[in-house]
Length: 92
Image 1 (cartoon, rainbow, N blue to C red):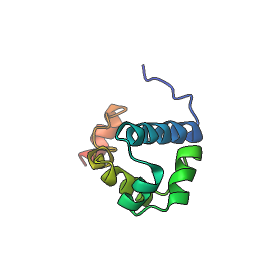
Image 2: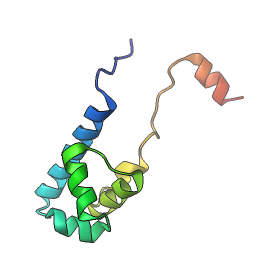
Image 3: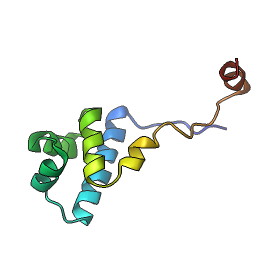
Image 4: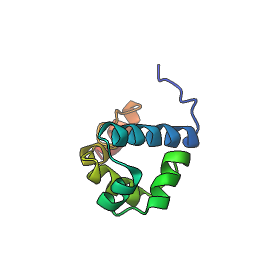
């Protein structure tokens, strides 16, 4: 049986922001430095770490700067089929 998702989009975004912040801190990179390395404005980075709100382009830039671009490249690549109808539709 498929697990149900009980998180809101906002909660998922905040969890992602927390993971990015933890990577930044683990690598001992300040927000200011990551802003310079990524080309994402300091305000956008600060808002992302606080609220989880960021554009996809800025998130990709942060991932590249943190040497995590493969995580972005891998999104939606290993999605299992939900049912046999999806398999049939994809092969038609």
